[in-house]
View 1: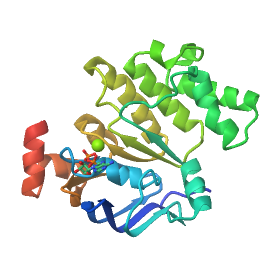
View 2: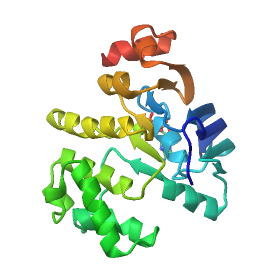
View 3: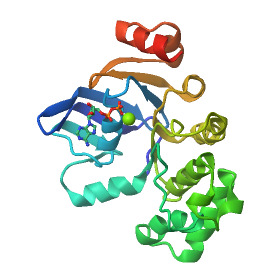
View 4: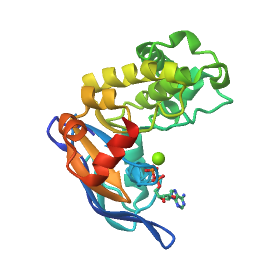
Length: 248
Ligand code: ADP
Ligand code: MG
């Protein structure tokens, strides 16, 4: 699938999500054009991870629609697999396979899902490992790397699938402070290359630098959506103001 700039990459309409009887997303609608960068922020428990996870069906939703790259995420397994191929995800806790080397982590999905031969997959993986500035660790195991290095591998691994959209769920919040910028720098480069990105993060510098829009969530709803400068300098809602006063 190829999205042109300006096309709608992510289209969420009136999404509702329950865990059992407990509703955690209420009437969430969000439209993201190809190439746009969205930062999602909000208090703990506001539904940010749940929303991001719904976008590649790591969670089911109970009402509303999600279209990713024009394909509706429903119960159709072919659709789900197609979307998962084209949507990369980076988690807070890296989620690398600990028993596989960095290179093996990177070639696994391209070989299994994209049916690349090993040589092609390895060549491509090395390009992405260079891009995240860690090619020298190709033969290492995740446990031998720092958190910042592991997260950069996780980004490279996702990129090896040649995704059209990248989802990030607090990619720097498990890192020691001195490692945050090495990961953010890689994400900034990715943004500058035109990737469509949805990032749950509270990194204001990152948001100001790359986000086209900041989406603020509270209690399962999108409360405010604004350009970063408007949101950070001039939040309109009381809940946004309170949240910003707590994190700044
Ligand atoms: P955030 O990422 O903004 O901190 P989450 O999306 O993780 O918020 O959580 C939103 C709400 O859903 C919270 O009330 C949380 O307790 C609940 N929740 C998250 N995951 C589960 C789960 N697997 N089972 C039941 N409740 C969950
Ligand atoms: Mg979360």
